[in-house]
Amino acid sequence: MKTALELSAAESSRKTLAAFAEIVRALAPEVLGVSFHDAVGETLWLSEDFLLPEDHALVEDALAHGRGGAAAFDAEEKDERRYVVVIPVRGADAELRGAARLSLDPDSAGAPAVEPLELRLAPLFLCLAAEMERVAAVPRVASDDTVRRAPIERALRDENYELFLQPIHSLRTEESAARYEVLLRLRMPDSSLLEPHAFLGIAAGLNLLAAADRWVVRNLLVWLLHHRKHWARAPTIFAVNLSVQALMDAHFVTFVEACLAKSRVPPQALCFEIAERSAASGNPIVAHSMKRLEALGCEVALDQFGATAPAYGYLRDVPANYFKIDGSLVTAAPSDRVANAMISAIVRMAGNLGVQTVAGSVELDSELEALRLLGVDYAQGYLLGRPQSLSGYRFDS
Image 1 (cartoon, rainbow, N blue to C red):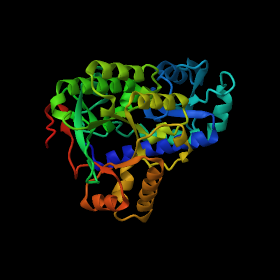
Image 2 (cartoon, rainbow, N blue to C red):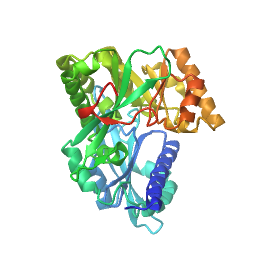
Image 3 (cartoon, rainbow, N blue to C red):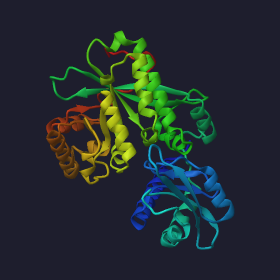
Image 4 (tube, helix red, strand yellow):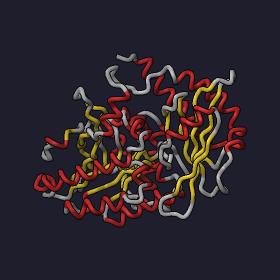
């Protein structure tokens, strides 16, 4: 088994690379998405808003030749080109430590040259090289020793997924609809189940997130069709998490519409949860997909709401029926004045916008009581109900 110290180091490395990404954005405003790769091209960290397909060949070529590279991709549904550059990251000894891959604003004039970006970011990349040396010694998957990347990749490609349901409870007595969040797990060859934090990063690197989201929608609706008598006796809503890769897929919403038609499940039974950071990215394709989902009759929730405290002007451009308050705020609510004030502000803003609030990760009675006092509408977490396998779920439990 890996020690707590090793797992803590892995988490620290991810946070450090995320911090590097924010500095890259500050130094180069034209950068939209960032990923970092080690000296053999493996993805160490990938930003959620990396909106272009994974191109391992470009990374590998840049590392093999020790020089930067650029590539252009056709943007979906738009008459424009989007650009990716890969910049090798070297240490002070000029030895190659890895690579940074950056997607650029499509409004940038023409194919961007690598050199100006590389020069502008050179001091930062010297610091990043030292972090890459440290990351190279840290386990990349925070799970049991028996879990390695190759089996996870095989399981992902074989779509060895399973669905679980976790109830979402109303904190208001007049609520009549039943609500559940649909949770994804990955079944490994040894029959163990991996939670999303252990495999979604790898799935993102393999560009498999949109395919996974399709699998979830298709299999959930097939199950709902076959078990209609268990859930259709009263209004019931199932919340499904969506990746930015799915939202960037021009055909995903059409796929959802077709699945709804074939299964005869009413669109009102689905609520799609989208990470607030993705919704706030300003990407018009993401906003367009969210509006199309709402137009189908599905609900839309902004997940991890309040985690990054963005400017909320983006709410004018994206639909939302729910703000799902980030778990870190929920955990701190009973004892932290700042978290308490932030949740209170989110509840007031939601009320003014006609949006309802959901709190996740509720594990203590004190958290639930704080949420009630603050006026939060719904809550879910281990205190209120643990995830249960979809195959044997009992709706009267």
